[in-house]
Image (cartoon, each protein chain N blue to C red):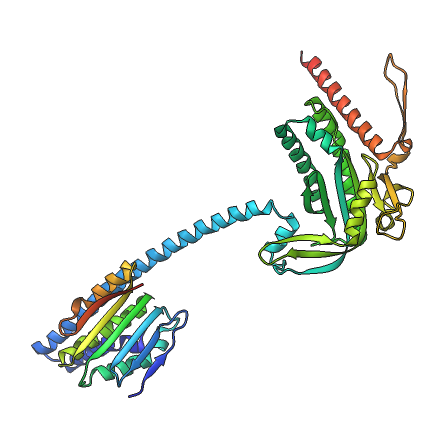
Length: 349
Length: 127
């Protein structure tokens, strides 16, 4: 800082140096008084500036601490809010990719619906607290699988789950469709395991779900008003997915032809009778998933289980439906776990 | 001598000098990126003005909410020049306005006014 802001101080200094160069033996008292007066003024100004600077620093420090507190509070709120949004939508908001307008666009998506068969009967049989724990555990498990396969969880409606693939991120239409089908099979597999666990915990009826998958053009985006909006999908194809799910056999996964066409090289499926739906002129072709095509061709598995003292059991995977296969798998795993546990106890005793 | 009107920005104050009315109002926040560049020219004019003889009241109003060290130096110099102007026989009034709840700004006004003998000084609040 120099120039005009310190012009008076510089002037005093220049004058003092002039006095020095004059080589005077004595400096007149008036001159000396002027020097000391200016110097005292300079000292007072310096003291004030130091105090102002220290105060400003303290103020900045306090503001920084307040900002830190607000930042932590914001992060806590953001984390809590994240539970109410699909994780992909939440991430895209914080990455600045998400629009906050009531706006939508048309996209080719693969949609998934599921619900629990006979949920009313189950909810009447359980205490509300037990039912809440059960349904939350079910949703948590299914949500984890959805996340693993990259599905956008749209909403939970009672016991129903709505998920879509292809927005906000897409891996390509065929990959999105395959992820949806693989997710559905994984969900059914997991549910078979959970039913064994819940039966041991006293659940009177297993949770059996129907799952429907369809691929089609939908409108996706923010719907509602600027004060309250929801990120979701709408359109005839969404409704159709829901109807396909309703027509699915319990424990199964039923998909529309449009999805099957994209995944047929990776899924074993059987064509069902075309389904007439009210309001849709064409009969909708559907395919029931039997299994995923694995490289070791597990679908062609034929095995015989020999247990001493019992008749041999022949297992032919190709003759089992998906629900039957998954239930058998879950039961066999459970039996194996129990046997292993028993053997372990015997070795340690 | 011409008027000086510099509107406030996010970092610099409003600088409103009217030599005919013998008034200066300095208001807002002051932490310019280049204090020399912002204050130099106006200060030359103000110093020249305060060295003159005036028939009526010279009134300078300060209504600051925040200022940095460089700006503080400018205000201290203005106070000093105003005091010299009053010592020469002029009628000088300095008003220091601060927000109701701003003890910091009130204390600064009191400090700046410590050296005043001949110039009049008022401490005022605003909401």
